[in-house]
Length: 530
Image 1 (tube, helix red, strand yellow):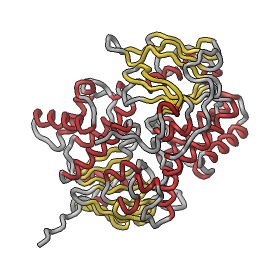
Image 2: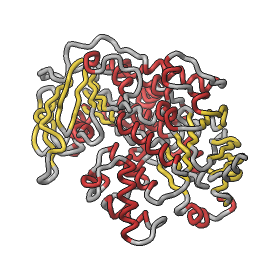
Image 3: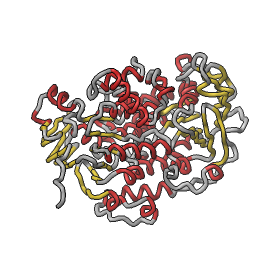
Image 4: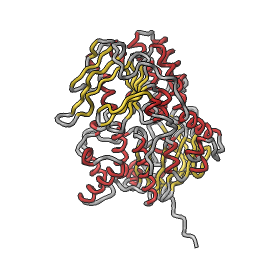
């Protein structure tokens, strides 16, 4: 005799979402069920509605978005409740990891205090709350001894992502909605996080996983739903819809819908990508032309250096990748180049001349010279201003172009990255995380800088958008012979764009060399064995 099928933790029926003034729905009658012990993954291109669906699963939406349909959380219809009633119904039962971790991290609270306070939603007594906070940090892969007394801004981008995950786990909620949880994580941590998510499901939790990371989805998910333009166009067991990593290399899956096949084909082309022959001038070349960092050290009070001493040069046209585990100092070093972090010692030069350490002391030409694209781009845009004007400001203010010329150039660069004119006419809140990530890249490229620093710029992109961006990037760098510093955990992307690789560990350069020598035969996301 078979046991009764457990009641679903989440049941969504005919859920639609409409943005004010938009001609098409963001979600179009989506139906989805998540049961105990199950991981349901939602995949699809940027702008397909994944983040909107994740919010709708909690009975929530962004400003100016209206929801309809039915959303049952353990039998409670969230759509029938007031906003306060929905928050009460979710408390301790459902938790959300947003795509941008800064949305849930309190900048003025230390890690330990913030997590302990959140734990009160599901645990009574200080000892129980402290234990829950410790378990959440362990599950998210954060070292308690290092992290618990820090503020969020003292953590790397990958560490902030793991702290946001710990914030979702600490309440002990039975339903977890995770939006791009592996974004910004190095391969080993992404693999470990997948095991954590799988373990949570095996212990009885239900997980709604929204992700571009198809290898993690394959290892973790039971069921997959493919979204396109807000509609669920295909669903089924993960192994049938997405195949295995090996089957994708051979292009043999049971995917039926064109959108699914396009995602898989783009993934295969990108992981198989090879780059042009390497240039002679790499990061260790001592040349005065371009941007040069000399003996950079960043130290926090009396602690060990976050970075340094590090010396690197970026001659015109060079393409350098900076690799290393989360927290190894990559972003700190990149921020020094851009004038966003002041080094304890060391200098940055442009064509042999000293660049002021702080961006507010750099001239217009010096600010133009080093452009930095952040890992999390949403907060860098004005929320209630159309994107085209914001993108055109770069060429207008830094290069002196007329408004019409600057707007035309911004549109051209955006089109090369797969963004259309209608998207540029919208406000930032109306675009997906992946679309905003590409907009941030457009904004930096139109400065035509001496050095473009890209910090995990593919982390929010679906496979097709990622392939398009990586293919277009060399041509977009060519007009000004812009040098590229590419910070990434995405090893196939590194092979596609970089000539030279520098590896960081504990703030120091531990290896450097040509990409073919340091990353031989890389096809997909590297993961540890076992």
